[in-house]
Length: 109
Image (cartoon, rainbow, N blue to C red; front, side, top):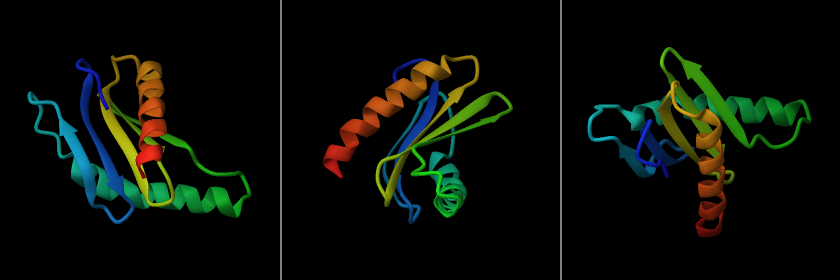
């Protein structure tokens, strides 16, 4: 899901907090599963509010914090994909690659 470079970690996770697959760059000790579990609550809340306000389905969520960005892309009602990358990296390219990966994953789910 993440090309070799600025990608720190990635996961495909269910809204129950169980990771289907995860990746962490060898040089990092990043806890992507805890990040996914904690952020799944926020993703669900954003989806609920978007529905309540009749704004449509949430497709993507981006969070920037300190030196990292966390990008989420909804696969379906039960699953999402997330990647974590350094802010110095090309976030636009990461969003594009995540969108492509999720389009492929939708066929599998």
